[in-house]
Image (tube, rainbow, N blue to C red; front, side, top):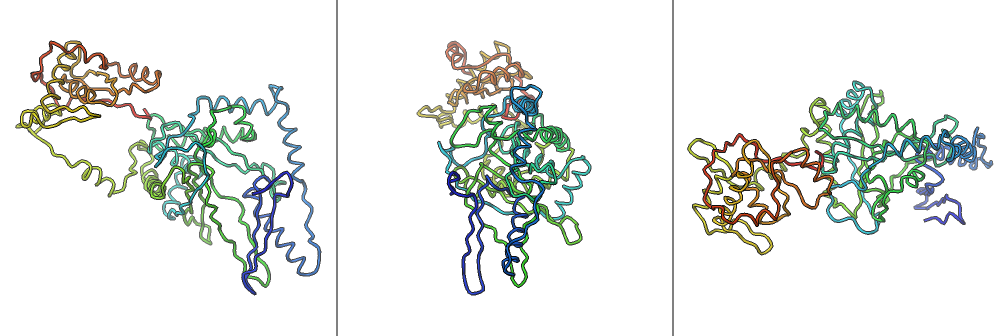
Length: 504
């Protein structure tokens, strides 16, 4: 680490590994340089080496501006925060409006709870995307009038939505910040971090989502000057030592000029060093590769992940799903993003086979309903355990009779085919009774978790418009209702349930 109050933010070490084998290690603190800085820094090192080898002092060409000139220009550009017409005020207002109501935390398929304080331990999975896929992605970008980055952002947001992240996906994106060519050869920290809010709600087609991303990103680029630190200060989100504020996932295109070290009389190669760290929960890094003729040759990528949250196998599954999802999205960009396949053949076989190893019972018509299957099982094995939960156990007879009593009450209060009944019950044996009772009445059930926020429950009830709601108190009103099977005509074609997922 560096103590920036007392030492320069740059260290150089030369390691002698053998008579003709050396390692030059340059350590630059991020406060003094960014990825773009590596190319001019490498050129400066080469210039210094060649001059010293001739016994001369390095002779660098003076740059048109220095970093201090940039800082003074930025301060002048921003103006005063008390001036409502200043760039600082207008950009602050834009981001306050754009990021209003941003989720505190993006829910990801983690393997363990988020720690109270992040360790920043991380690992990286490298991967490549083939030339054909690269070409298809570029073609879709051209058709849509967007950059390849925007297509990949739409795909990344789709993946996170499909993995349970909801439909409001804030993605962090580093932007070079070198808005003037006079800054190109300057070593310094110009990068800013933008929060690109991606709206995947309504299950849009991939092409529609790309259009949304384009609109969002262009507006963000037009307001890219406000430093991220200032944005955090202004928005003042709920802080947590275990997560990054505002964003937990990052997408970065590595399109900086390549740092080259070509020296006469020496064979030189740059080495990639794995830092073993993760600044965010997930960081997706991508870079385009091309043939010598300039044709697309594929995308090289890396997924950096936090070991506090993810096992290596889980991170690998994220990479595998991204590759599978991309192939599907570019093949059918006009299909809803929710239809794109993210499961492997093995996973699909496991879910439909190993995890669903039940059997179906058909009546003489070749079709039946769920509650008829349960009734048949209650007739065959009335004393067999049907439901067990936290010390409560119901036999098939007890389950069926309790469901019949509740179903009669529901029918009496308006439940029936093509109608909805809300189930506002916690996970319990009563919840199973409630589901079965609604099906016996011919209605469709709408599960409502009582622990949901009040506005979420209100939205579900307002949108589904159930004829009534089953809660724990209703079970106290079943006395006097018969436990015999109901004689109602219920078709398998009637709706069985309506579920409001995190994204609906």
